[in-house]
Image (cartoon, rainbow, N blue to C red; front, side, top):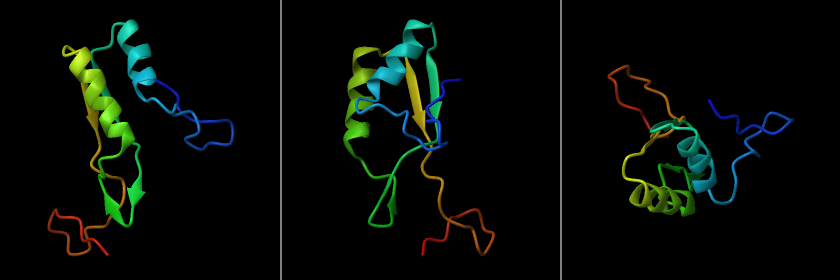
Length: 87
């Protein structure tokens, strides 16, 4: 478990280079890193941004590390069919 929260409870603890987070875990012997944080751009979830590029670079350098990120924390399955109904 790695804390990424700032004192006010926001995600201010995520560094500009997210590879630092994974590097810290890697040096501690962790080889599976799951994450449920990210950004929304123009209402689209799962944008490939600078963090995505940094994650790709990290796992290319450390292929024995698996980094998993949630597809998004937004959306509602209004019709209850297992599919998120986007607004």
